[in-house]
Image (cartoon, rainbow, N blue to C red):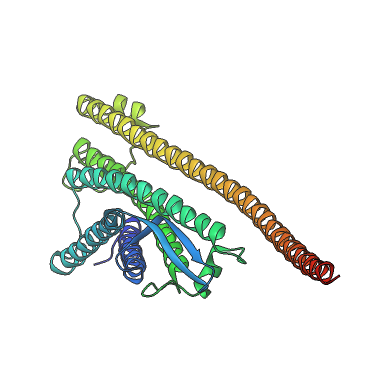
Amino acid sequence: MVLPGLLLLELALYASCFICGIVTAASITIVQGHFGGQCMLYGLVNYNTTASLIGVQSSSAPSLCYFVSAISVLVAVTCFSLSLYWVYSLCSDGEIRRDRLWMNLTIAVNGVFLFFLLITGCMLKIGRDSLCNSVLQNVPNITRCEEAQDRNWVSPLKGERFYNSLYKAETAVWVNFFFWITIGVLVVLQRRQSSVSKIIAAGFPGEDLPALGICKGHPRREITLENAEDYLDSQKPTKLVIKLTLESMTMSDNQCESVALSVESLLSDAKRMQLQCRERSEQLSMAATQLRVESASLREQCEATQLDMVHIRRQLEELMDTKHAIEARERQTRKLSKLL
C-alpha cells in the first residue's frame, strides 16, 4: 500500500491542479454574475461625473469568459477523475500499475492542457490589464485599479471585488500551468524508470531474478551500462540477449531525451509568451499614462476656457448696462431740448 515518491508527488499535484481549476472557474463566474452576465475581460468603463458612478461602456462576448471557465473545469474534472481512479486502484488492488501506453497518453493530455492553460493565462492577463487601463483613464482620483472597488457602480452592477477575483483567477491559472509542467517531468521520469526495469528484467532471466539483474547460476553482480562490456565477455551464452537489451536501453534514452527536449522547448515558448504579455502590458500602461496626462491637460484647458467665457460674459453685461445708461441719458437730453 506504500506509493513510490514520484507517484505520491504526482497524486498531490493532481489534487492541487483540481483546486486551481475550481478557483479559476469560480472567480470568473462570480465576476460575470456581479456584472449582470457581462464578460469584463477587455471591457471598457465610463464615469458619470454628476452622479459619481462607474458604468460599463462595452464588454467582451460572454463566450470568452465561458471558454476560460470551461478550460478550468475540464482540467479540474480530469484531475479529480485521475485522483479518484488512483485511490480506488490502490484500495482494491493494493498497488497502482501504469503501463507504457498509459504514460504516453498522460504526456499527450499534459501537452494539450499546457497549451490551453497558456492561452487562458494570457487572455486573463491582457484582458485584466485592458480593463484596468480603462478604469484608470476614465475614473478620476484613482492611481491603482483596485481602488475602483471602493467606488460606487451603476445599479445593478457590483464592482466591490472585481479586481481581486480576476487577479485570483489569473494566479490560479499560472500555478496550474506550473503544476502541469511538473507533472509532465514526473511522468517522463517514471516512464524512463519503467523502461529500464523492464529491459533489465527481460535481459537477465533466472529463477531468483531481482531488480539488480542476477542471472541464474552465476554470482551476484550488478549490471550497469559501464560494466556491460566486461559482462559480455564473461557471459557468452547470453551475449546476444544483452546486446539487444543495451540497444533497447539506448533507444529508450534517446526517446527520453527527445521528450525532455520537447518539454524544454515548451518551457521556452511559455517564457517567450510571458515576456510578450509583459511587454504588451507595459505598452498599454505607458499608453494609459500618456492618455491620462493628455486628459488632464485637456481638462485644464477646458476649465480655463470656461473661466474666460465667464469673464467675457461679465464684460458683455457691463457693456449692455453702459449702453442702456447712455440711451436713457440721450432720451432725457431730447426731452429737455424739446422743452427749451
